[in-house]
Amino acid sequence: MIHQAPTILEILCRRIETDGERPALAVKQAGQYRWLTWNDLATDIAQTVAALVGLGVRPGDRVAHLSENRHEWIVLDFAIQAVAAVHVPIHAPLTGPQIAWQIRHSGAKVAIVSGPQQLAKLSPLAAEIPAEVAFAAYDACPQGLAGRPAQALAELKAAADLQAGIEAACHARQATIAESLATILYTSGTTGEPKGVMLTQHNLATNALATIAAFGCEEDDLRLNFLPLSHIFARTCDLYCWLAGGTRMAIAEARETVVADCQAIQPTILNGVPHFYDRVFRALSDKGVAETPGALRGLLGGAIRACCGGGAALPEHLFDYYQRQGVPLLQGYGLTETSPVISASSPAAYRRGASGRPIPDVEVRIAADGEILTRGPHVMLGYYENPAATADILHDGWLATGDLGRLDEDNFLYITGRKKEILVTLGGKNIAPVFLESLLTQDPLILQALVLGDGRPCLSALIVPDADRLAAEMAARKIEIASSAETLNHPQVVALFAERIRERLVDVSHYEQVQRFVLLPRGFTIEQAEMTAKLSLRRKVIEEHFAAEIESLYRRG
Image (cartoon, rainbow, N blue to C red; front, side):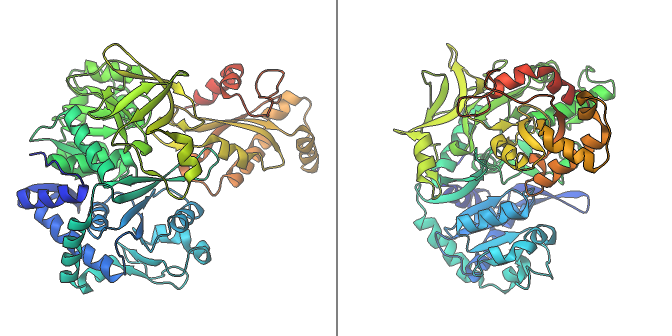
């Protein structure tokens, strides 16, 4: 039974009231899945609310949350809402400086981490984090943070006043309205400084319910969550759609165990990024069984009805393959700023190459320059403490997506390009190339750099060396080379630039690392139409001029 309500918190309360004894969430422990009921979750949420109250969290406070996927992530998300606070999830792969910045910028009162590995990232930066921020952790962190304790959340829950937690949750249920701020999610900015997307209870609740209405919901649906819950795709399309639909969900043990977890749990629905679906296809191809009838369904547990793709463009060969195997791979489209779903395909309505139709109550129109604009209850409140960036993207209620597209005669949306300078990798990661290029070109040996990776499995770069400085460096290292062509391919020179690239990108996340690069014999110029009069890079022109070099980078494996 689908619960219609204006807030995620109210949907949660109604779900517990109507389905308390039903199995809800499967968690893997000691190699085996066990089911938690909605009542089990309710008890855990109430205890966590009590712990948050004990930490001094009050309505409107920001709670930073740095953790990999685990059932505690889900419990904490609901508990933060049940104390009327604001959830600030931080992506687990981020580096210490990135994490510390988000804690500071959000003004978090409490920061909860998964364990010592995440806390260790912040140890060298403890002085940069306000002293009033209280830390807690799921797993024991005996070292704390440079002398500051990180209390075990389990101990806090055990010692907390459960009645105070219940009273706080009851008050929050009455006080939380559709317009209440629910979360701040940081997304990549073109200059490298992330922007905090503010989403309300109304944004999240309406988007989950509209997605269900567009896609459909079966009583026996069972989804396996493996995408990071800190990203809005999984949070809405796995977590909140599961909650609103009252179905069942399991949490994958790890990214590397997804196929094994499919075998164990036998999901009917998977949400994933194209990179995952490509890996599944390649695994079957490597075994020589890709075209064997039923091979794909069997690998995914045998009960799969549909796979849903988002976060990046879906290659058409993958759409075709899954279709041949009788497992529709259905594409959707959205942004963090839109909660995220704008359009979605469904088992009853999909087309090759399209991202589905706009979901209920979501308007889409195409601007004169081809940019996709959208309006509706899914559009964010704005960027946290960044009115200028908000004004740049919101105009009279319409949000400018930065993507280019078209609508066909049946209102199916096709994405045709990207207006803004954000790369989306095959794994669905949003990357700000201008920021990475600015870091790379801070090295004296790197005169120019162009970072690539849109629709690719990893980042690569075209690097223009500073010829004079490189010559001096080679002389200092007593490297003798006969020609400039030999210089750019010399193992010691290549190793030198690999070292410099690693050094320049040491403070960014693993998915922002440049995995491959090529040294170019000439720079980008205005005369070649590769740069504007302002000396900005014309990315498409450069990619056309160096297409052979780029393809050679990605042919390496």
